[in-house]
Image (cartoon, rainbow, N blue to C red):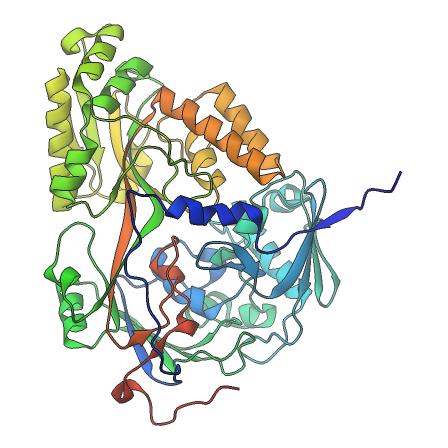
Length: 554
């Protein structure tokens, strides 16, 4: 018998992620706004002005929590791997990698000659330092969970070990990561910005100021940060994937939406995201390029399953059938989003286009309500419908949901939390008989990131207090399953059970809409959304916007 090889080589165009393309071609949602590169040759130079709605808290990957910091940090830093436009995991600083058959030992082979912005070459030791820093209990990183399955991580975090046993630099260009248990999505989480490499000497020299003076390896170098005004970056001439076309990238902090839209129309911004809570005539303005794409996000109503009247699954099913999602999306949202049939959104691996969901059916809702022991809502206390969002769209949506449920015979009271922080700490998942509005955006493109944190009984974001031992088992099994097709089948089984238990009402799958000036070329969008646009591919096809000192390709 021939010996079984100890390792298998993982090709970076993983078969699993190829299924993304299939998921995105849902007939209900045709692609829009594909950028057609003109016949002219891409030109170097120019300044790109981009809006940030709010000022980031930090640009340090270990402490990133807000999307505004991700916008900028994505251009300054690189990691071992990255995602392409179809969310395949592809090489970045790691040119290739291997995993053992049991999924525990991962070996990454780094490119030579990749340099930090201050000039030093990146080595495997830098990744050991970066990942250890995220895990260090002194730092209290919000993304420490990324590496909690690395062997020795729990001991290091608890202070009983001086180093993380599973992080090892075998030589200058070989990094080995050993897990304590198999975790199939591990390669995907390494594509998150919080896993991108930082130089130890600069972090220690700058201390807390590193978050405002970041040093990475990315296509753009940090220049300055004027508080409340802008963050400026410049092209990294030595970038290992090739110099960006743009000379400069300016992130302008513009909190007022109307001002931002006016500036875009005047030509002082190169792009603008359209508000998802109101229509705008610019959306159909032929002067601009319009892009519309699904993003990995689902808007839910969470139904409290542990206590109170909503602990009855037939009542929860009745609520699902009674809410007219199609009418809400068409009348309030002008069909700008996609009516949700399941939990996993369009573009997510494992998305099931054949899932029926809960179509509007008031007769079926009344039948289930009677089977739940409450015909026409008899003996039911008023249900609470909570939100922290006060946009006109959200408030209209809740009025319609209230009306739909009252037609079923239920009493509904509307409540608004004073802030998202108050909503998260004092309201979500803490009130019997309550329904909570909340959207979930993927951290990384894997179904585990939706189903485990939201619906495992021990999930950190299980706002419905949902518990089903069979679902728990399926999700735990899927995390350890190395065969992609088997993993997807396990997730689809779990999703079907969750849908039958109805701990949530799936309202819509989010999309994002962005306008670009007509001269902006090289636009590449993915379902991770606008923060992940590869700005190094953007170029400006307009002479007045190109700087006089146009750089040449290396």
